[in-house]
Length: 158
Image 1 (cartoon, rainbow, N blue to C red):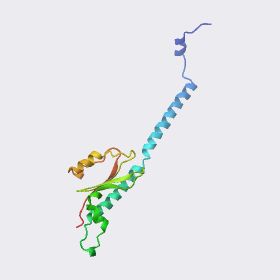
Image 2 (image 1 turned 180 degrees about the vertical axis):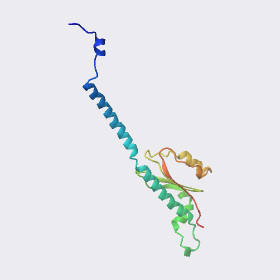
Image 3 (image 1 turned 90 degrees about the vertical axis):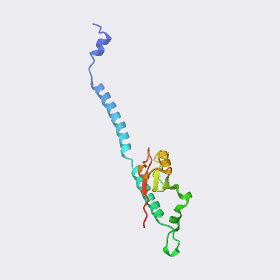
């Protein structure tokens, strides 16, 4: 019997059914992992919900800002709306976002901003919000990172 050198024996080996099964198994495992990640990304229902809720809060706050305090009680202005000029109420928290954290709100001269700090519960937009305090326009404001919210420009009813 003739002895075949090891390198020649390996090079003569054919791709068999077992090898095919192993490759197919690896490809299937990768497809399951990638499919799971993609479906998790596609199933983000919290972000649209947070946008809708922040919009509702912003519209309610803006409506309260547009009501000026009544000097005559017969005009029927609501007290909480007239108190929005109080500096202590210019920013704060209200309600819960889809991730269980409080929505933040900030009232600036041009309007109202209500936002969720997102899934990571960190305010990624802090620098942009600080620029609003130093006189930057509300039109230049954009949320950063996973922060999500709504900007409502202030309009007078009169």
